[in-house]
Image 1: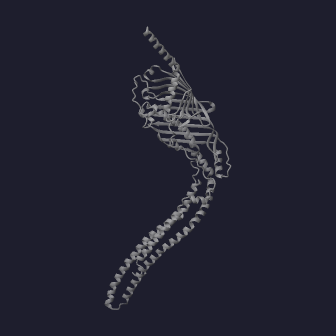
Image 2: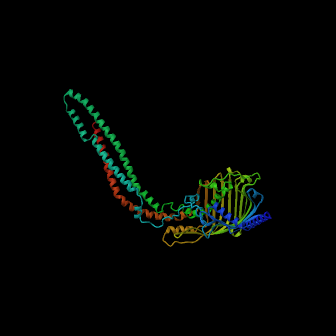
Image 3: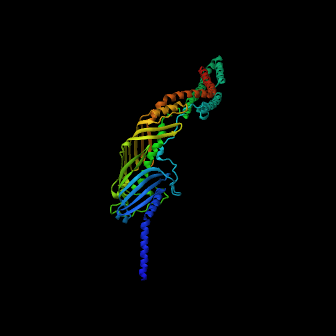
Length: 568
């Protein structure tokens, strides 16, 4: 009896545990998903509730929110419902095989009511340069008001005065050296001595001494020739020094022009000052949308190869455990055969309703033998047509090949803010957009092209309250735009490809302000010339005087050559 009573207690306890398990199973599953999801994402993962059904076996996740670890006040995704139908037998082998699933109410980049950062888990924002930083550019308007020329001269590192001082020092050094050399060369005293010797020989009347005199004349001529060669060699050397100094003087004379060009570029009045302005206007917006797609691919790619998060981790994270899964049944550890998707895509100025199908999503395509495919569509007449197709072929992990094609046409957009600066506000009130994009990724090499055309453009009319003629000319040009094209290309290593952005706006702005730029530039250039010339005139007078003084040596040497040559 005692044994039967004991078994009765044990059975009652087991029954109670089973009841408790069934009652609290959904709570436990919710806790596990939130906890493990948070570890993987490294930021808060929230669920409103979990519903489990047993026939057919399935689970529904309600109110999913996944925090963006880089922006903890934003959800990278949010979904109203994820409904999954599971195959039972694979679960016995610790495999999750989803026969069908539906993901409804999917939204991206939604705001959170509280931060999803987890202390000690969520990494700090990465301040290092990213691939998309190449698209960004500091927004710098050309200088529209003439600056104070005196302040420009003070701020500029003028090469003219530096060159003038250096040349003055060089002239003084060479003049001192040549003054010493002239003392060492045959001079007037040497010449006079030769003339006296010749005179004495001429005065000799003794026939025998006259014969000897002829020999002495030859010796004198030899000595004269040696001295003459010394003087000629010195003159040749001097000519080189003199030419160098004159060349340096020419550089000093040309330096003010270069200094003026340098100062003009400091205030943005050079000819290229409006080039690249479009990159400053569009760069952040384009980088945000391309960067968002890149983020998703970057997070998904390790799982497609079956390497999981550890493949993207750092050296401090644990190495992945050996895979001991039995794949003899042809099934990977994780597989979604069919996933229906619907939700909203946050395009500029609009939210586009879409639906689509994701098939054969798995962590081991090499086992399943099929590439994953994704197709999204939206054909709401009021919103134009959207078609997105993707093939993620990781059947051979060593030769993966992914391609994504986006075709968006007749898509109305409105209120796109390119610049919210008070001094230069730029907003596209409305237009019709067409986007064609192809991205290919093979062996970790990216080849991306995004061609965006804005047609029937209406810009928000803005005038500036200041008197800046150039600024108003640029705003007027932007206000009159009726078509705009933005082309983005990225090519190279997936981690850090070369990225470029080009647009027809640069040409429009350049043409609109070129005349005004030249007029303002000429005015400022004249003022700078006047101020700079006043600064360097005294130096130039001093240099010219010193050069002339140095040049007198050439005349002196020429005279000696002529005088010594007359003795031959």
